[in-house]
Picture 1: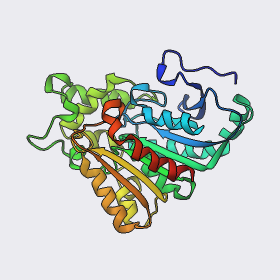
Picture 2: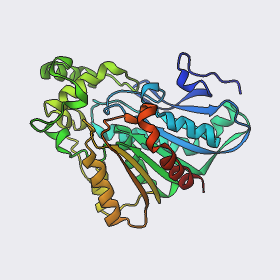
Picture 3: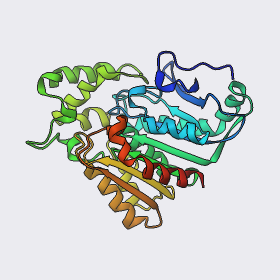
Length: 329
């Protein structure tokens, strides 16, 4: 394969990596990354689709600090090709609806155009869409749940880590309750003022962006802490959250999930509270009892705990066996 790994990212050292545009918005190319294990022999390969998190407003498809190490290990261990999507980062003119549109476009592109692109970039390698694992964490877990509800029969297994599946949760709408832990442990001196954050929203909304870094997080924390995240970021331009943007409401309305679902969530999560996953799990058990569901609660763990090997290790063997069996059988 005449490909190159992402420079300076040791997390991806075992992969050949390339990016391809899947759409353009206002002259800005939005891309997906393809990661192929370096020693992978030509053939038909299972697929992992990753939707990155980042508070809906930052991160990107190859942002190593938020790329689950267990996901990369699954690809190596099972000879899978990994496809990771960018999307427009909030705030945007139409709020969350813009990102949902992007990911639907990505999904269509991955089925209709990516196979031929892969043959040109990595001849002899093909995608086995019958064995597709969809992964998302945090905000990416929200998007993965949305995509899964729209395409349940195209996904062998869904894996969600601390997913923000309830955008109506009071922490997004009103901010944390009195005496609740500070969002992500940020203190008041660590975050911009509300007025500074509102200026950031207005300036950011004028520019299409699909890649961001840690510098954006304090603004998101500020807006959440002050109870303005929903009305300033998730909603805008008259676009209000409705059933179409709310996974819990979609399930209540009778929509289906893939037949295999794994969720893990820390019970000390300081931004996406455990109650979001618990509500999702309870609803799936009630409305979709046929779902093969595993729900792991990580005791004492905060957001993104699985990025640290020692914190992930107690759950790794059983959880990954469930995921691999569900995905590959």
